[in-house]
Image 1 (tube, rainbow, N blue to C red):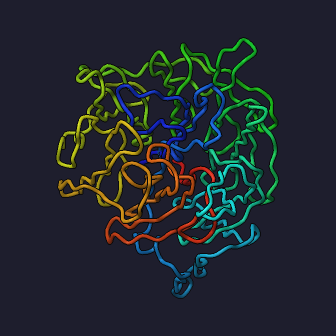
Image 2: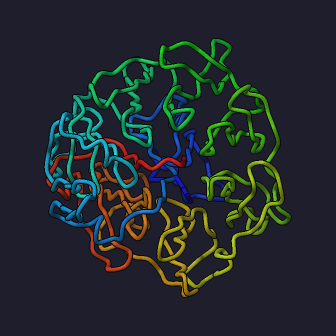
Length: 446
C-alpha cells in the first residue's frame, strides 16, 4: 500500500518552505499518519499553537461516491452472504456505538472545542472532546479533553490515540495514550515535547526529550511510562519517518539523514544526497519499502526542491518522473516538496516561501493540471492535504488566522478528486465547533 503522511505548520514554519527553510518544530512522520513536531517555536518550548502532521495515509478504498455519501448506506447481501454493512449518517454518536469492524483508512481522529468562529479565542485554551470520525461524517465521542490537548497519532484500527498536552504556564508537555474503547487515558511521558507511536500497533511511544544535560535525545517509552531505548545519532533529531514494518526509523538530524534500528537504536545506514543537491529530508514512505525525500538544489541558494525515492534498505536514490513537469502546474522557484498517490494519478505539492504551497495533479494518462479545491482558506495555497484514499482527498481547511500560520478555526473536509464535490465532516464548516490541531488520518501500512 502506498502511503504518505502532512499538514499545515504551527508558528510560521511551512511544510513547503524550502531552501532557507527554518524548521523550528520537530516532527516524526509515520507511514500512515503525518509527521510529529517535537521542537519548540521560537524559544525552544512547544508552541501554544498545535503542531500538525506533515504527511498522510493513502490506501485502497471504495470509489469516491462511497466515501462522500451523506446518508447511511446498506448493502443487500445475497443468499448466504455476510450481513449487510450499515454506515451511520453524519451526526454525533457515543463511544459504545463505534462500528469497530468498519474503522480504518479514511477515518480520522479529531479534537473539537465549542468555540464560535466569530470569536478571537484560541481553541487551544478551551476544553473539548476527542472523536473518531467516519468517512460519512459520523462523529463518535471518545472522552473529554483538557485545554491544550491535541492528537499526534492514532493506531490504524483507531483503538489507541496519542494525545499531547502543553501547559503554557509550566512549559511542560505531557504525552497520554487513550484507549478509544474505554475512554481511559494514561500518562506515558512528561517532558516529551511531541510524541508518536513507535510501531503501528501502538505498543510504545517515541519522541524528543531534552535531558538534564540540555541535549535533545530521541527516546522510546513503553505504555507503562518506562524508558525503553535512547536512539544513537549525531546531531539533533528534526524529523522521523517510520517504515510500515516498524523495524527501523528514518531520522533527519542537523547533520544528515540516517536509518536507525528500531530494535537496538543504532545507525544502520545513511540516505545519500543526489548529485546537484545540497541536502535532503525525509517526507514519507512512498511504498512499503521506498522512502520519499525532498532535496534542495544547489541553484538559487538551495531554494528549489525536487522529489526522490530511495530504498530504506539501501540502494540508489532516484528522481521522481513526476517532478519533471517543471512549470506545467505553475511551478516557480521552490520546486516540489510533497506527493501523494491516488486512484486518479499523483498529487504533487509545490514549495513556497510562506504557508502552504499549491498542488498539481499528474493524471494516469500523463496530463498535468493545477489542482484547486473549492473550499476557501486563509492558508497560502488553500487547504492542506491530510491524506488521500482512493480518489478522495481528506483536507484541513483553516479560517480566521494568518495566511502563513494557518487559521484558528480548522475544519475537516472530504473532497472527491473525480467530481470535485466536497463535504465537511467536522469543524466550523460542519457546524460542530472548531478543531484544535490538525486531524490525524488512520490507515497505517500493514
